[in-house]
Image (cartoon, rainbow, N blue to C red):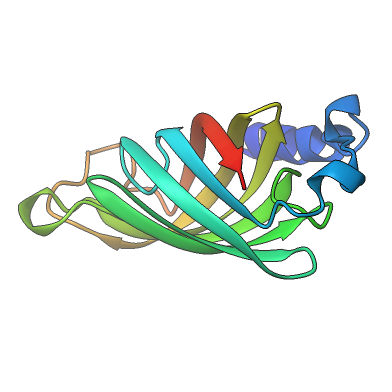
Length: 152
């Protein structure tokens, strides 16, 4: 587990120096909103998230998926939604009999040329009746999501 966490931290540190993080702010400065659609987005298996910049580099997002929801705060590296960001997120996965759990987590969101990848981990706050044995019964749950985004 320590190797996974150290690997994620190393990946986040190295990505600060990647060429993919460079954007032309003259063109992108008006991109204050973004819509992301993909796998494991929005707190569900397939979902969507809508993000908006609140002030400067601080943004907020709300997402819905099949079957789940999420809400969180994003701190972007540049003052536009097309840049990568650190994410603090609350996820609720499932409803009623298929409720799996509620988690709060930290992640690193990588955005590059329309592709969005989020890597991180979360702390399990509550278990539901549909919790998978030996998978997400641990207090730490790794999280990943992959999708496409469009900034506007």
